[in-house]
Length: 298
Image (cartoon, rainbow, N blue to C red; front, side, top):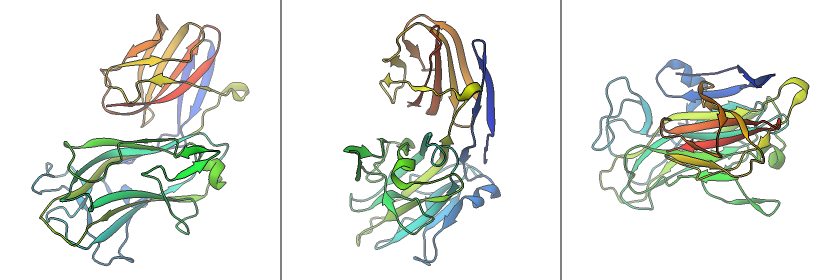
């Protein structure tokens, strides 16, 4: 279901802080509203094999009504095929504006007969005129790799069930001069070679667009929160906090406050209770410093 959350209102200490979640939504392929964002490219490939539905294949399978987007819901993928679908997004505060936090993430499952059959994700900052491969570190910005963070984008071979991927687009604004309201695109492509061994292909589900800037009274700016390990399945340690933690807030990708705690005694937190996914962590110290970071729970 499309989950556009306009803002989350919460309090940190005596400060009423408003976090504006302009464009944070999940595409779960369960209703017609997803068609606003998804286009299956039948222009470059009239026989495009991407389909939305409940897969019933050799490895990929789900209950009726539990939809995803998959390289054919019933049949193995063919040889010599290149098929794409495109996710459309209107830049908000993360990609546009002053350049805040932005990422695309989701679940995927892959089953291919060789590493020559693979998926990739490309990004267009100009509504499809130019495309940049973002599922690999292919660009440098100020001598640093861009995107700033890529996690688990191995869309080839055979995965152990559905797995989580994330691509951080935090430097997109500075590189491409995207402004609020510009149309940006994400292109998901699956490519097969000339050998077919009746495999399932590639599946995506629960795609999350996270495009956010946060501000409060007097335009307070958050400092970056550093943590390790990230991704984590249990304990996460905060490494750059100078002072004692007064409060912790964890926000899910759909804008829900899922955890809050006052007076954390040390700079670590057990997150085993969280579901797999991408979260924002807000921390305030007794010294009045507000910090925010993005955590991936696996």
